[in-house]
Image (cartoon, rainbow, N blue to C red):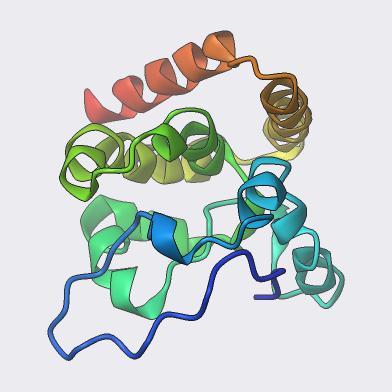
Length: 167
């Protein structure tokens, strides 16, 4: 997966070290915050879309050290569809998860819903849902650049996740 680098390269993690879903703030370049907020760092993934290794909408790719956290049980359904540049889980993380810097708090408040939204995507995948996610992605980026939150989109995503959790 291609990306613009927004962070310094992490030294090789120690064997047995836990995977982290939060970026280490000390590693983000000065301009990295802006390119991450504007999602400019994701633009090179258009090459992945063009070469067929990625879709525009779908579950986000999972790092090797995080595979066991996301792809087991019913949540392994997300491995059955192509990974995407954006999707409901990515939007949830962008709107809400990126605000939480503490790893433990993230794992308690964001991770379960994010994982559930990847499963939700597999259940709802289709042309109209993908178009909706594309529109929501553009809206969320524009809101973020204006310093506003897409609370109405966040609310809808949480409701979708709760519906699949209840099943």
